Figure 1 (cartoon, rainbow, N blue to C red):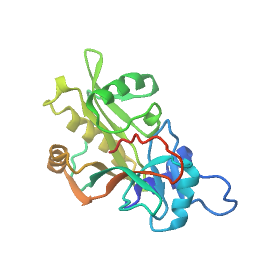
Figure 2 (tube, rainbow, N blue to C red):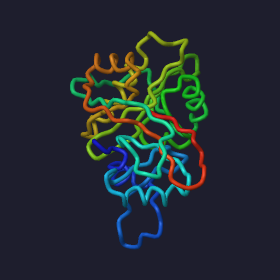
Figure 3 (cartoon, rainbow, N blue to C red):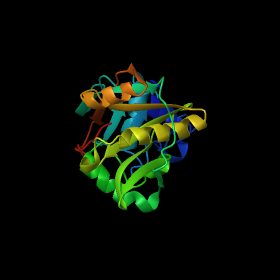
Figure 4 (tube, helix red, strand yellow):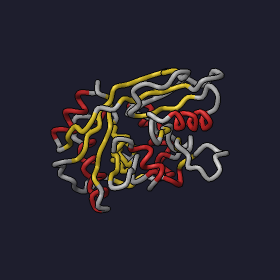
Amino acid sequence: MDNPAWAALQGPHAAFAQHPGGRGPEAPRAARYHPDVSPWAALADPADPRSWADLRALVGEGGTAPLAGVLEPPEGWETVGAVPGVQLVDTALRAEAAPEAVALGPADVPEMLALIALTQPGPFLPRTVELGTYLGIRHRGRLVAMAGERLRPPGWTEISAVCTHPAHRGQGLATRLVRAVAAGIRERGETPFLHTAAANTAAIRLYESIGFTLRRRPSFMAVRAPGGRGNTTAKFS
């Protein structure tokens, strides 16, 4: 849980992982999700220069990558964005199904992307829906709230993309969806957790009020590899 993206990419999400080539039998020390699935990359050990060398090989000269939990990149790397975050884990959540929730899949992605663009809960890409279960609530046929699963380090599943259309807030839709997604996670014998920006105090208070507990305070950081000038755009949480 201190390095959840790496644990997920080496375990339940290995099918979505990309690694640097040319290492022969030596195990790679950096990985990232397929760019249509998630922007996140991960290092086996941020203190190991070999991990950074592998990340450079993976993203290319001047390439950028979002990372979690890295305090300071090594010499030659540039920090192009950083957001203090929090990681909260389920300790007393009342997980339960939401009868009004519907399963979302690839056919729903255009609506999901539109809701994400409107509410900005964090990165969501055309194939993010493949990472796990996503549930939504519709009003008169239109998707107005959603939540789903993202990182899956062994024994844990992250709840992510929690958002509600501004016209439908204040009805508890997000809370019901979080409880429903958590119910499915618990049925697998796993524990729900989530991340958000430390500045998002309203969301943190809500999550703590329904049974999540602060575990750690990671930093979400976008770094640029030495070399050419790559894309500097990065989104977090």
